[in-house]
Length: 545
Ligand code: NAP
Image 1 (cartoon, rainbow, N blue to C red):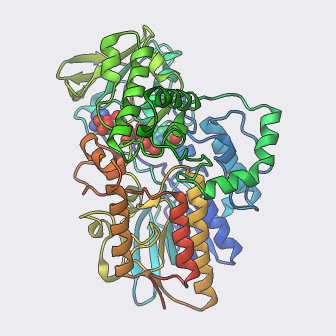
Image 2 (image 1 turned 180 degrees about the horizontal axis):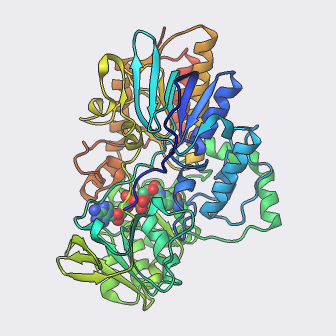
């Protein structure tokens, strides 16, 4: 089954020495590479994909599109790089348009020439004597760099579901994120989708249009908010460009890097009728607007959360005609403790004759047979199996590079008891190593986080270079404080309850991984206020020597 990266054929690449190696050619890697070049550093980028695009290079499955709106799913904060001359055709742009956008950015800022594509980092070791990183790649390449920066993606390390018999399957079995460039023929085929996270939710209605049948294997139901997509005509494009200053301000002041304004209301302070009306409006606006714009306490107050959850469950019951299927699709845990999905006609798809739901919580999958999937409740013959089973979030893409810091300490050993960083961007014991979209970073609109973190990293590196510094390293005490703060904030919310339902927010979706909060829940504005303060105070909490 396809889980691996695209392979390079070359085997003979000499060691080269550069100022910085950046891993990843998605939003964060391209941004970082450009910013470092701007400061006069020599940069080599590495990406396992055959071209730029990151998430959007890999995820080409039917139905893939953003959950962020077009007006801010692009470089927006940085004046030079922002989206003046780019138009998406839909409010929630399809994946191929985002990929085209990133290709355009790479061309415009001449970034492709910096990259080695179809290349995977196999190890990165810090030499204390040379104060340099030695990075090795799967094609035999060796790079020596002062700075090593992971922009390898928050959700890019696919999980192997590990079912016995996968290799015996006679049809096509694939992780959704390894969808081949030329596609997989699903028209008229019997297709299985395993998993009902954001990926499965996008796949099901898109496949149902042309597949003979779509069998959806669901373990834990998800809360799926509507994605009110629409075509963006000329007027909308003009508004988008003219409104850039407001969008920028909105992002900077926001909780999720999306320019949405909190309501200032608490759910239980209003009458039942008002609450219902607010939820109705939130449902119509869809996606993350429901979480941010309805009430301010959905993530923290169990009663408020229950009211929202019950509202969504009633929507499901209202949409899905078969009551048994509707009940199976209703989540019974708090809303938002797993990342809520966003779908176009997801629940409606279950009213079609060719879409069937299989509950694998009560009757788990046992194995894959040559003809399909076997559960403890039955056997399902299919032609294609799509595993939409998710990722080892944030830390996974970093530790898979086998990163070793000071004293030969491996990063995965350091994180064996739980993730620890300073500001989500640096790690004590790993000098001159930085992460964008790594653990303990704010979440939401990833391009906005990429720009914010990329700017901070570029600033500290530029200052270190100007001062002739050799090493930048987080102090252990600063890392302790930040990690404690990240947990304290998480414990003020309901999100830790996600550990009972395999939420990637807390690392509970990866077997054997120590559970700890993966993301910073304090919000986009507090995060960047704090990181700016740290920078303004001469990079407090970091030793620059
Ligand atoms: P996910 O949210 O982690 O969902 C994985 C699904 O697969 C869950 O339903 C899970 O069930 C199931 N699963 C996992 N292992 C399984 C196994 N061994 N057997 C059967 N089922 C299994 O993964 P995802 O849908 O790929 O999404 C990951 C994240 O990527 C999202 O949360 C989102 O942040 C991002 N994403 C964003 C977009 C977008 O913005 N448009 C689209 C796709 C993905 P359990 O819940 O029971 O573990």
